[in-house]
Image (cartoon, rainbow, N blue to C red; front, top):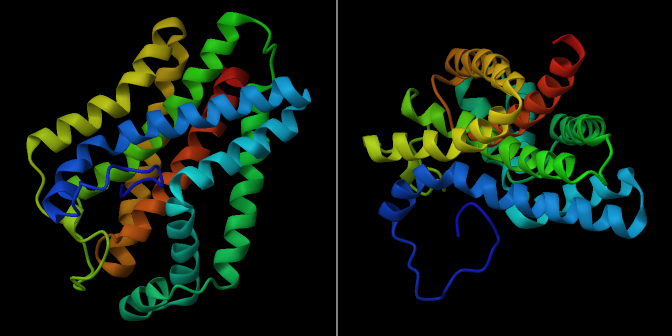
Length: 253
């Protein structure tokens, strides 16, 4: 209900404690989003016989499924850190629902990189069953692992907004070992599955760990911690990082 636009039963309440416990399932949401993206990609590819159109429709499916939840955070971070020079100014800009020049430019560049990166990763014989399965698992792995990268930040970093009305406030509360274990389990299982048949995928973790380290360092330097928008931005950049890492792996190893 919080992480996607997928309809939920009306009897489910909006208790903040549920949102805190749902932290462990954030990477599992990546399984669902990745599966939807893969189905749309392969369906449109078979229909139009165009990888370019298939990638575009896949990106559209992602946005519709999540309601541009993470893309909105990425744009807010671009605006906030691009136009603000103090903690208060950065937080104020990120809170503004209007998108600025930095956010618009950032989204254009983000989607451009995503488009060409996905096309490069999937640029293979899609009529081969084994390759088809690997591509399907790649979509799922990318979305699960990128969400793990983002949600893991709340386990080690302070939440900086004091606004109790903030949508991300409940997930910023103290997490138990169940949330931590669940998040890493759902985040790493797709990677382990695909790495079982191709061990090179394990190296994807290296650039992700490096990116996470510098992202946290950057956020702490400017605002002293993270916000919900920061998590959305990390998820988006982590997604792109994984695609680029796959391309680099096939070239260098």
